[in-house]
Image 1 (cartoon, one colour):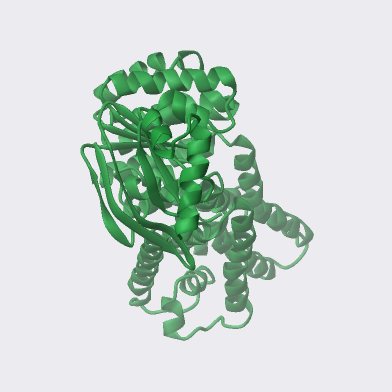
Image 2: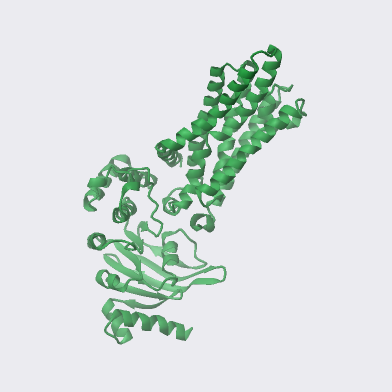
Amino acid sequence: MLEQTLVIACKEIKDHLREVRSLWASAFHLLMGPIVISLVLFSLRNAPHAKTVQIISSMASIFLLVSAFTGGMTISMDILAGERERRSLLPLLLNPVSRSAVVVGKWLAIMLLAEVGVVLTYAAFRLVGVPLAPLAYATLTLLPLAAFAAAVQLTISTFCRTSKEAQTYLSMLIFVPMGVAMFMVFLAPHPSWWLLCVPILGQQALLINAPHSAIVLPTLLLATAWCTALCLQYAATLLNRDEIVYGR
Amino acid sequence: MIEVRRLQKRFGPIQALSDLSFSAANSSITGLLGANGAGKTTCLRIIAGALKPDAGTVIAEGSIGCLLDHMGLYARLTVRENLAYFGQLQRIPAPILATRIEELLTTLNLREVADRRAATLSLGQSTKVALARALVHNPANVLLDEPTNGLDVPAVRSLRDHLRALRDAGVCIIFSSHVLDEARALCDSLVIVAHGSVVAQGSPAEICRLAETDSLEDAFIQLTQTEVACA
């Protein structure tokens, strides 16, 4: 099972890396945040330093959270919905390979690109001179969040019949972390402890340096891992449905 | 060898297969003939293990390779990579797989296009690559669902030759079609399907004798319509 999972993951990554145009599109998508922030930095060049830091770091936190969802977006719309659209899913599943190996292999491929997205966005922020010192440790919690995002994107892609349909829903998905991030920044800077243990909400709270206890981080990581596993399991059961395998 | 016993399958209100039985021997090409919607594709999918029947059993001696109506090559991978991917998923050890791929590229005349991406292939070449992919694990049985659809004359002819060569190598081939001339030219045994069950099985000559006509087309019409009259 492990070997086949890796075979699938490698094939998906190789396949996607050959789609050079969509790689460029993903990169531009990811760089929107740093570009916007550098414009804001420029317009605040005469403002008092404390105010600049406050505005910029809360904006940067929103873009960073969203970056966990952008890096894997283009590959995920192709990886299963595209496979359904091109009618290659049935031949794939006729091989002696378990549904979970297919799901996990594809998830690994999306996850890799999602992690690259987070790292790239973080690096670009450093490059334009965003004060990220308080964010460094919180950014690490975005890596498991990107794994969760990859699982959600894979599940959505499994549901959709064409990559165009998947694109619609996956673009809508971006608004979830965006909305959550804005909610935390503007409305709940002092969240209750349980809010900190919910995936996405928790990561954002850490990014804006909300006060929290030592129990929060391990609980958040566990919750994120658990939600990821649930999503993957659900995607694997979807692949047992006839209308997913044959449906157009 | 493949034996199908009393298969039944229903999709909502449609009874796709009702009590379908036939057998296909090794070293022979068995043609599954029927009008569109007769149940050929459903039957092949069940044999392939892609669909579960509501009732009935499929006995297959040895492994199965499939070229179903879903061709599904990966456009951005080369022909070799497409074959290698499925070979790896079939758990063929790397050195054996490498020689097997070279062997298939030679026998199916795909050597020239071996390192081209699948997106750039013609339909005839794609069909051959899909066939090569179905054969990568050297299956004892091969299922083909209307493989000649949309192919030009030379491509059909070369596909036919490959299937004959496979048969002579001992493979059991089941081939679905609604083109009677093609079936007559290629098949050792015919299974005529109408409304989800078998109305006749035998060599083309036997089928004609059964229907008391000289042409396979008349026999086909007569046999499939008798079924309507009975139903």
